[in-house]
Image 1 (tube, one colour):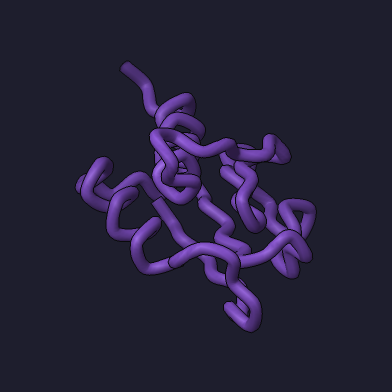
Image 2 (tube, rainbow, N blue to C red):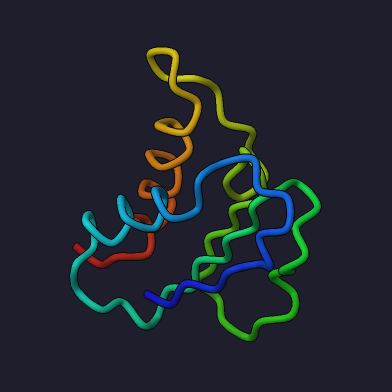
Length: 93
């Protein structure tokens, strides 16, 4: 999996925590999946700028354009869960 970070000038979630959870869930190298990590809704990284089909797009508190709601009072937990689920759909079983 390739992780691409924005400049993190105005993040609304902890990028390091999200990456830690994702890497823990997927310890194997998944080069065919690209995860774009935008810390805010502005989304400076754009999927159209990358030539790969398997992209997971995080921008602020959304994954692939779907806004994340709190899970047990923890919105960031919901974000990491949604990102992991989005990555998993590209992994062959």
